[in-house]
Length: 325
Image 1 (cartoon, rainbow, N blue to C red):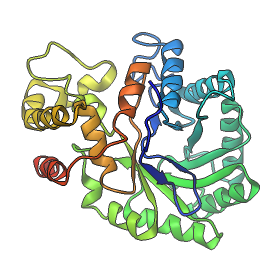
Image 2 (cartoon, rainbow, N blue to C red):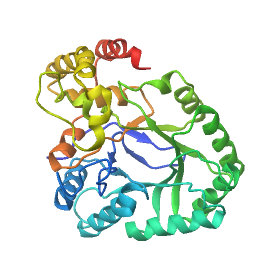
Image 3 (spheres, rainbow, N blue to C red):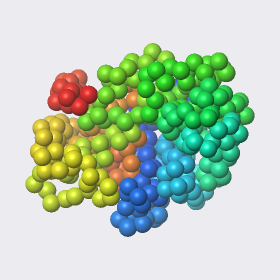
């Protein structure tokens, strides 16, 4: 599909990159534990998804060193190398550092970043995030100092965190500010079916400090696509079937939300998934990063941009899903 014109954009932190307000999550790229990588889809499907996303104007790809034990980064590195430089948009990479217990020094941050850059086959990444707010022998203060040093060194464009509470985010912001570096993002679970950040202080703190929200699982692992219903003979792949929301009773409870997404979608000539993603973009300072395992999924995700829900539709969806906050 051709690039969407007038894409909504988001700036990742005060000094971070400005990118389309929808990214591509790559947890499923190379992961055969939770997802069905190697069975339901393979490398050629993922490369087609990569190309389709860029061709549609989506540029930010979010990965992590632990996704597929490095395979997600390796695939992205290979796909970037194989894409001709003159072909449209180029990828902007965000990856993550996992604070494992045996990573007890600032040097371990340097080594982990070096390994990620090697797998990605790049000299730097636009965004480097701390995957979880875990404290073992390396304190948050020392961790943030190590990340700030990598910004000064030029190997990281911006620093982010993931799954941090409002209090933890504020502390990370302070430690980085002491080094003259802003905190760009907090990547958290956020969707119409997971709205806790609106009530636990994370959203308010992010807005106060100028921190962007990267919303992972923005389609609630497929529940908001509309393809899973109590009457449909369709089961989710991988470990998602363990989620009680995919049960008969869970899907029955969800039907008013799905019906509203379908009705609003028909009115705007969009799919339920595109409506759910656009609702998140409409919250402001939020960048959903839905996964895409095929070119079709990537192109469909891109259709969440280039338009906006009416205030009435925004309010209806918010009211229908207020119990999920």
